[in-house]
Length: 122
Image (tube, rainbow, N blue to C red):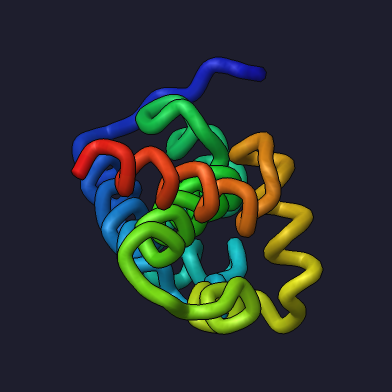
């Protein structure tokens, strides 16, 4: 990765992008949309975001979605497909594959393990 210099204005623009991604927008914004909204070109957006936040914008959004999925699995009775739809996945199977890839277990297994752990603590 080549070195990149970020000005104060660049950092502020990247912070704006992070704020947008933190809101877990549905549908997920494209790099083109993020560039337009931040005023940064694609290269500076991707490299600068990774430099400041340790992940690409896409990976950052995926991790945010999975954190939200875990909250919904733990705190609601929504089905896995409903959670997938809520987070912007058109197909539950895509969400399930992504969840397992990121979290390491299937969404249903995660819910079951967390529920068992919670019930035994009460």
